[in-house]
Image (cartoon, rainbow, N blue to C red; front, side, top):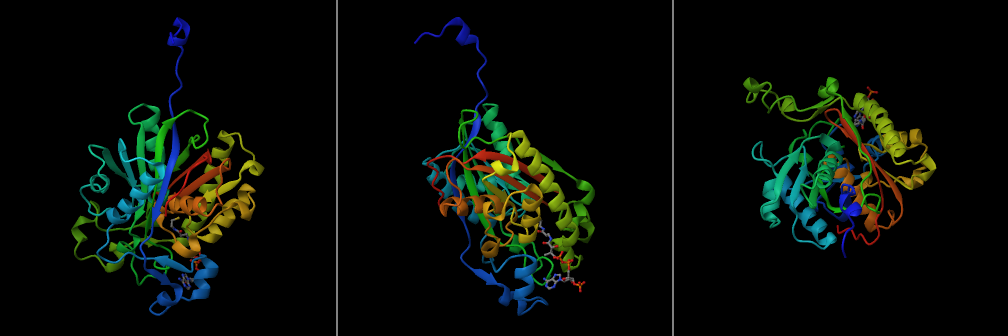
Length: 347
Ligand code: COA
């Protein structure tokens, strides 16, 4: 068919980033609260009531983040029915090595020949940051298909004898495939609201091991080489920042609270999720959760929850979904999408 001069000159809308595949993977070993209580001054009741976790997964010491990421990535690619991607964007707080990035290792193991591959470090909001970067690559025409992964081996960086972090964090990975599509089609990512506040960087920090404090790398106490967290302070920031970001993302989509069919909140603490959903006016039955069985898996949290909710039928085609995450940085992000038809998450 011949194009008229007018249609040939009409500006074409930039492609949208559309969710076409979803996968996740968890290491098999679960660590119960009772197991933790055997060597920590805590209890099953305290952890369930104050955090909402019953069991978290722990990778064996020979398993690294790329191992989890490769498993989840392979499942997401299969879920999308594809074998190649133009880029791999991996969100993690726990790379295999300080250098190089973990994404190229994962891309090679997945057989993604010549794919651009790099890591994103944005703590527990890393997956939504990675998704945003991937969507930008698609909008600009730089990539047509991107594999986005959130993967964590948190057990490698927490002090297993610290009761303020050991009960909270778990290991796991989740992944999504984003492909170029039409703006507004089901599965197209909406506007992103994100930000950071480095004034409170030390609220969740590993003080030693990077370029700061390098003189004390060998001599630093065990606790300073692992995650230190002022949990109570983080709790308050998390509720405030996630509520504000989620409100703005919903408004950008033109949604009122009653329009939100599913609220996907980073699984940090069941009480944080409850406070955020309450502040947003979204009833608890619209707020899926898996923290009880996986714990806080940082950058893996959002895709793990999406895969669980989709596989269990809690997320259904046509649902208006609001996603929000918060974590170290401090950093946060929120976005929206309408759940697409025909998406089969593979766990
Ligand atoms: N077991 C038993 N008691 C514990 C405990 C544990 N694991 N951890 C703390 N406590 C005690 C404290 O010592 C304190 O005792 P006190 O009242 O005698 O002083 C009491 O419980 C309350 O401590 P607090 O720190 O105020 O508890 P909290 O209700 O804020 O819960 C967290 C602590 C860490 C679970 C909670 O703050 C949290 O989840 N924060 C967000 C953390 C997070 O998810 N970060 C990741 C990035 S989002």
